[in-house]
Length: 400
Image (tube, rainbow, N blue to C red; front, top):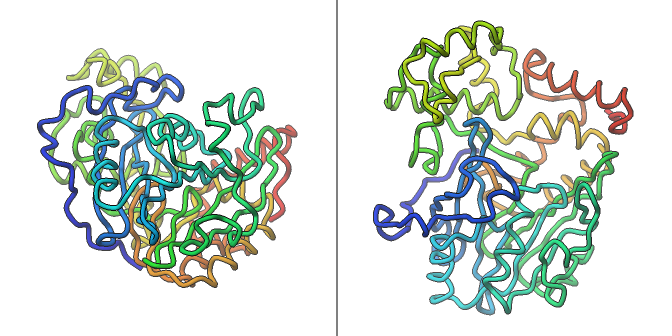
């Protein structure tokens, strides 16, 4: 399995974009980086068939791509899977496709718990007033479980995906598999994976990812988060080099997957504040010089084990806090998908597209059969968190 070659992005004259072209005025609904300015990269991954639109998101400069996929329909028009923020730049890219292939006919919300995906569906749909919206069953909201229309989804155009994909209006081209809803105490989890049979492309949301060695292109447009995390102390200057971009990305990956990997130590806050007063960069952008991270010398080895040559991974948070609550249902779902014919996967995060096989897809779920494939030391924090939540009755206990 490997990342497929990346063709050039097709955004016209990105250097000429104005601030309003990348503005996202509703950033306060999910207030995470980059807040009100969201650049979009748009590229074709299957000629005349499949396109991806990438933005980025993160917390404390732990930033990763977030992705929407657009597929051309055989009968004309477009299907959109997991919309991103409908900025002017993003909508211009979709408009280019509509001019060639017809209007957006279907918009898919394939998750019930991924707020970073759900928040964009209603505002995206308002720009395509004839499109039909299909959402995963058993939607919920927090802190109050509200009707979909109260969350901004147009009631006359919003439908629940049928359990049997043959009943969907796009069944002639797509199969999909709905993961049985997993009850998590304060919430629920489910995901709908789509197969475009024509391009042999599998679309997934959060269930699987592949980590690239080098930072994705969307992160390199503004490399500051990469360079921030490439430092070893508050006294190190921000230096933009290819080596530092890669180093920062690999450390960000460890943060994003493990939250607290074994190769990371957090310095005492007394010393963090003391060092901040002497840091060469003390701007708001640099968090006023605060830098509590201390990486052990073997951090690179930990990343290499996580990256695993780009193999498909189920993120530790899903392994330890969510999918292990319903292992039988998850394995049945994975088995169903593994019987399909596909050559590549486009997840909503990290690398894409990923050249792979159905067998490799199924192998990623072997952690439910006692084969995590990730170091116990790095998984320790997530397992302690899992145990604590279960002991306090916040989540149901794991079943594996």
